[in-house]
Amino acid sequence: MIAIVAPTPRERAAFTALCESRGWTSADCDSLRAFRHLLRTARPAIVLTRHRLGDGYSDDVIFSLSTASLRAATKVIVLIGAGTPSSVEARQVALGADLVQRDPVRTDVLAEYLAKYRGLAKRLRTTPPRAFGASFRFAGATIQPAERRIQHGAAVARLTPREIDLVELLFRAAGSVVTYDTLYTEVLGRRFRGDTANMRVLLRLLDASFRSVGLALRTSVEVIPKGGYRYDPTPTPGS
Image 1 (cartoon, helix red, strand yellow):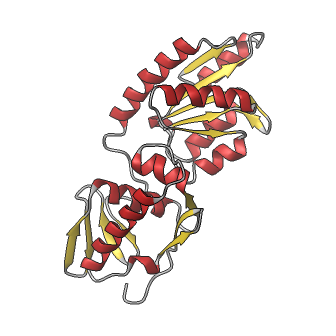
Image 2 (image 1 turned 90 degrees about the vertical axis):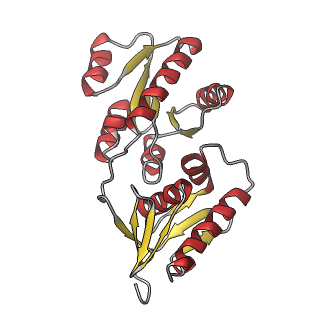
C-alpha cells in the first residue's frame, strides 16, 4: 500500500488517481496526525509525503515510521517546493528519505519510482519482522504465523494466508477499530468500495477455524456497523 501524505485535497486526489491507474492500493492522509493514526493499523510499503504539512514536516513522517519499526522496509519519497534551499533537501536524505523531488512533480517519473520501490518493498516484506515474536496469543489461541497454525490445548488447525493477515492486523490494533478501508487494503490488497461481503466471508472462515479448536472467536472480535472490526484482547473464559 502507498500512503499519500499531503495537505491539499487536489494533490492527494491526483496521486490517488495515479495509483488507481496502475492498480496500486493507496491511503491518503491530510496531516501528520492522520498518518500516525494510519500506522496504528497499516504497514505502507511506500510513503509519498509533502515536506511541509499543516501540523508538521516530512521529518516527523520519517520519525513516525522509525518509531513504528517500519522504516527499514518502507520507501519514502519527499516532495519539496521549487525554491526550497538545498540544505533542506540534504536534510531529508540524511534523515532517511529514499528520494526527494522538487516541484513541478513529473508524474511519469514519479510513477516509475513508485513502481520500482513497490518491487523492492515486496522483496523486503517476504519475511516481515514480527515485533511479537514467532508466535502470539490471540482470542485464547496460540497463533504460529510462519506455519499458519492455530492451537488451543491439543487441538491444532491450519489457517489460510488471508486468515493470518486478518489475525495479525487485528492483533496489532488491539482495542481499536480497524476500518474497512484498512481491512481491504491490508488483507485483500484492494480499495474498499462499500461492499463488505468479502470481509464477512473471511471472518466466517476464521470463526470456523477457531471453533475447530474449541474457541469462539466472536466473543473477542466485534463487528462495528459501517466501521470495521475491533479485537478485544481481554482474556476469554477458558483461554
